[in-house]
Length: 388
Image (tube, rainbow, N blue to C red; front, side):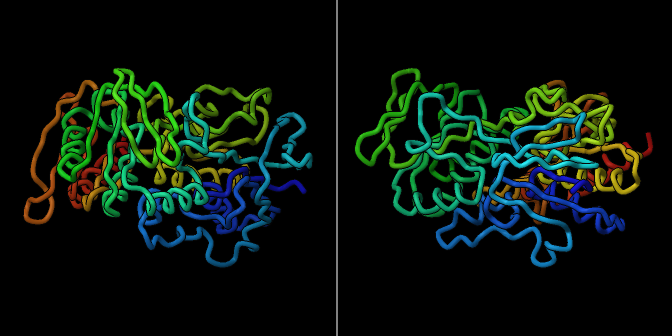
């Protein structure tokens, strides 16, 4: 077989294949993915797909998939031998490669005391279909975890008339991504929509009472509901790489060119990659759709060239749609030491913009219905890095 094998056929894997073909790469390309669906875009899973009449997520390749390469769907990679340049599939098959791209993404963190038939997780289209159908029958939803997946589903549930309680172990929503001021604004949006938001509480258990559920908090409080969604973060999908010799530490550790091995042409992109980002001069792992696309373009160029010539200098950018508000964040993801400036923004100044300054310099921003302002800041951040 040889050629390039891409493990993971979501947005990153597909974009690598497209980039290779666009660059004139004529060697075989094989995409391997555990999902049985045709490659699809994942951001809509927690948004449009959750609507009562939610359509399927857009396919990443409407036509011409065969021209990109062979798709091996419904089978997972379970092992890697970098020295022999072989991957092993769950069906026992072994595939050899000249170049390997690891694009396996991440998996939801799970509750050790609640089985998947008691609670719901959201990662795949199959998960989304089941959750969407559950929302059609539910009257009350408890969301465990106040990150973006949980708050987006909470928003969709409210639009369908479902009462929502969000339980967050920390002191604010989206604590990994947002400083206190914009996090408080996000919480206020949910509370104004009628959501109950509980902070600084851990879940001690989930009980079953017929078709109902009871979420038990660590203070003894009991939350009765019909449906429980767990959104407590994600872990990079690296279990199949244990024993391969690749460095695994909160993802596949990579160089600035996204190479994961000094001895073999093995790259990693997307949620699974923890790479040296020269834009910030530190290791980063970003669970962002936009970062994955940028990384995929760079890896495709490096493989097509035959040597890793391009570095992945990525300015983080993420967006979310919740409760009729378009949320965006751009820039540095370490914001504990910044000065926060808050101004109105957007058409008729109905939006809100938080700028983050360090030593008088803007290093990032969060916007609520502030698309124009965020676009300008994003452009300036990308331009300022390219000049250094």
